[in-house]
Length: 502
Image (cartoon, rainbow, N blue to C red; front, side, top):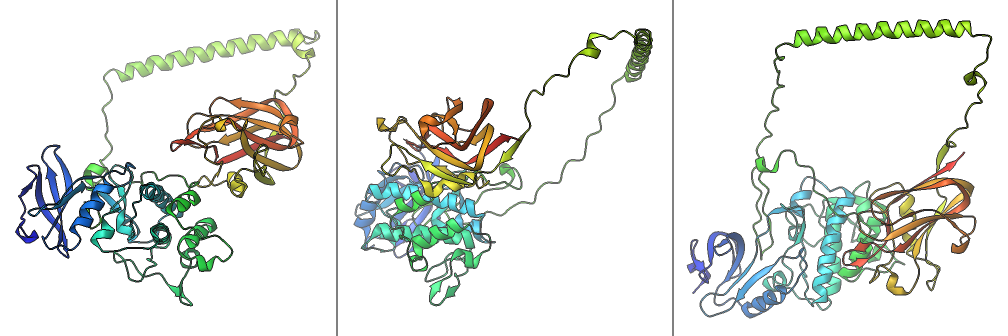
């Protein structure tokens, strides 16, 4: 049976009812369908009997169905027979990266966060020997449920007949192109993609993101170039696998829902997908409803009487206060020659000395039991740059106690001079669990530093206060147990504020 003989309303496997023909190309047709057993929309791909890569598509779909990362599109069924061959996968509703950057680039940190999620998901796929090979902005979706989805892993490359001798490098470059598009609103490819303008060229090479768009942070410019433009960053190692891209973007805060101009119920979300899942169309938007006029409520009956009673009470209280004041003044005049205990008492000492915020002069990862004594030192300054979008974080460990290989790791801050440190505020981010303490001293030796505060949980914002200011030039944020992070354990410091006495 040919693909053209399959019509809307037809049911496959007595379960999947085809509704809308979404896309046709090269003997393959994408449908929006309904799974009548589970009452949910699904994407169904059907094929002409002479489709040249039918066996490869079904094999790739079955392999993709074993992937477990929720950020990858689920494949539910893949069947090959002489009559009706098809692949059934998840129907994804949301907004593609193409949709998001049609009117211009994204906020840099948000673009990086979306690509970081995609990189981690794709790294998971590569662990199972599954690649993508044809990443475009239409494959990266911010779903209606406020999550990231990466479409088409394993299947779209077979549909498009794309192969690579180095799949990991190809996907790392593809992730770099997605990041470039998010940062600039331009597509750095051989052809325009999804209506996006082509990236500008300079001397035969694509311009870097910072050359195209003002305000792109240097570290994101460098990561993009290491992934897809290594010739522009001579001396730096290129990123050659999705896992390396994911690690480079690991410190970026993860995406949060973007503000909506009106309630979701009043503004239908677009539905999106690649050639193998979903639908690529934007739903029309309705104008926002006018604001309701302010409501004027009538006063309750009897309000006038209540007001009169209240006014009478106020007058009586004022009269009593005036009488007490006059009596006290007269007694004071009469006893002017006799000093009282209040007159002879000495002023009390100030409860707390005045403090001021001091800025660390330098920062470094601290791992006294490691081979080099450092722990991600290249990220250390991100903890004191005042930006919530950057952080220092440790290496990832397999247990909260560092595999019993060490007692702890931390972040060492150094002030311009020795000061009396009163309080240290630390933003540990969104992890959970762990334990940390703050130590102060003039030496960077752990045993010579004094703990001014401890926290049984190294997550969220914590304040460590000394009972009395502790003198020292060095401040150590010391993790004694690691918080959880994406199935492993990792310490994070997003921001630090130090208060010292004047």
